[in-house]
Length: 164
Image (cartoon, rainbow, N blue to C red; front, side, top):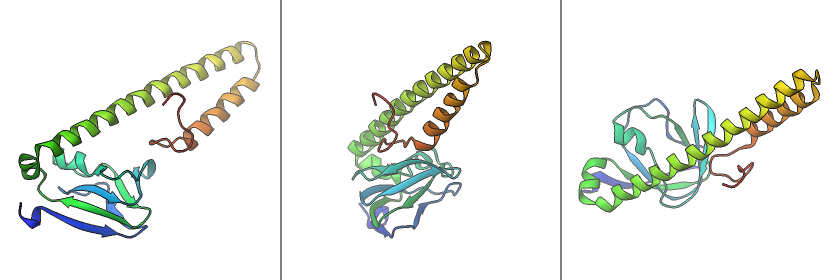
């Protein structure tokens, strides 16, 4: 494979690896380091697992980047410039990305179900509290909402969803 299709790249802590909204085709494979992923300024994930992919969605769909990826620590990547050609020559890599995307979909489904159940519980609690003209449970539910929304991380270090 020609060297221009894949290369090693390093970023320092604080560097932007991928900028949301930019058009690009590279796929990044994390070799070491810790990354923060944010969408529209909201942190959605922290990644530090060797072999994790970033930039794959825009690369696969030939669209603009949907997230910003920032190196939190010094990070090294294998950067693949021509993903289609790379996958033609390395089919197992394509399978790895497909498996990673499937795992993300499953995780997102779990989160959607969890949050939907939480909201339904808060609505029921609020309705019951209003019937009893007691605002205490509503205040508690609002406090729970604030804690949940500010404390949960996608890859689950802090504020981890129950049973995930």
